[in-house]
Structures are given as structure tokens and as C-alpha cells.
Image (cartoon, rainbow, N blue to C red):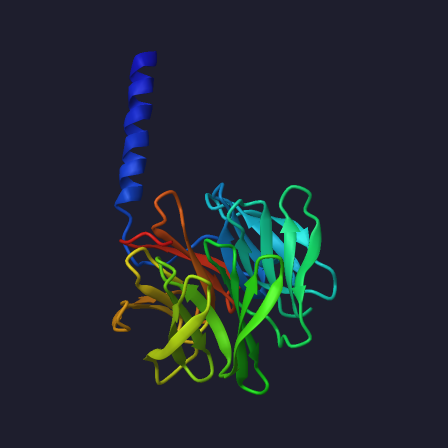
Length: 294
């Protein structure tokens, strides 16, 4: 009898794994309940252990740690009243969390062991750091929009917290992403609805700016690349993730339940689950894809 129970349990486990592998591609489903976050839900990012962190859990000024199995969560850290984060990245070692603090005009750093929060870099020239990406050398790139003026800047933050202004007179810079080989940097302008692609040299300098893609309607927000170099773009207001080839051609649009998608990240053991933050629903949606992300 006990042997039969063990056998049935093994069969059920195998069936569950098989069902997960056969989950429909590009079909959105909820991970968390609606209204779990503030309307500034943003910046989903995984640490080296596979833990998911998202900013503004329950209220502005927090960073939430989210259980990807059942959608539950807890506050990981609470920032000072003068700070509200918009994006999260981790250093290569995984012991430091970087936060784009648009309210305090900072890039913050959080010690993952002690949870101590400190200013990594502050500049009087910052508008409001919005989205950040980190390369294998530990350099950060930051979009820096001025929403009122419909303008923006592009920064590189070298290791140690030294800010380097790469471009000043841009549109409303928002989503930012690196190609898998780190030889291209993508930056979008939300109001102007343009995506730019830069070449990147070994020192992290950008050059040879080219218009990668443009759309006639809605806005842009966060972006990420998969391992094939396809760019996944949040179409804020339309409620879709646009997937663009490395040549800038639209491959598909993935329909979400919410409309105000603000950012996304690839996760799961195979990096084929995409986690999307929705500002109108104040929750996280997920969908499966065929190519893993970086």
C-alpha cells in the first residue's frame, strides 16, 4: 500500500512538472492580487538566489520581497521619507542592491545582509533617475527624465559612484536595456515614442546613436532583452509587451490584463517566465516565453 502511494505521488509530481512545461506561451496570468502595491509599482528584479524584489509594496518608499509561488510578499526595506525607488539592480556578487531614487535624486545602495541603506551617488544635475541597468563590469546606466519639460538625460555611473553624463538633450528617457553581448544599449523616450540604440565600447562609452524603433501611439516604459537579442518593451497605456527583433522589427505583441505596464523582468529556473508590473491594477502579471531572458 505504501509503495502504491509513493508511486502515485511520483506520477502526480511528474504530471505537474509536465503541465508546467506545457503552459501556454504569451498568455498573461496574475501572480499577485490587485492593489498589493502602490500606483508606483516598478522595477522587478531577481537576486542571485532567485528571490524577486519589486518597489513600492503596499505603499511608496518600500521594497517588497515577493514569493513567486503564491504571490505573497513582505517588506524587505523601507526607505527614508525623502526617497521613493523606481528601479532595482544587483551587483555581480549579489551583496548590493542598487535603487534609482527618483524622489531623492539619488542612486541608493542597500547592503543585502545588514539592510543598511546609503547614497551610492547623488548629483545636483540629476532630474529624477528612473530606470537603471548594470553591465558585467559593474557600471550602471541610468535614464533621467524631466517629465514636465518632456526632456531627459542619459548617465553612466562608474564603480565607486562616479556619475558620467553621456547625453543631455534627449526626450523623456525611460526604459533602458543592454543587449546580451553588452555591445548595444537601448534607451526609450516615453512621450516621443522613440527607442534609440547605441554602440558600447569596452570602456562603457556610447556612440553611433541610431533610431531603433518608433510607434505612433501610447507610451513606453521598462525594457529587457532575451538571449536572442529580442527587445521586450512595455507599451504603457496599451497594455501590451511589444517584442522587437535585433533589427527593430515587431515580432509580436503580448496582451496583458492591465493597461499601464511599467516594467518587466525574466525569471524562473529557465528564465522563460516574464514578470510584469502593472500600475493601474497595482499588481504583477506573468507569462511564459519560448526564449530565455538575460
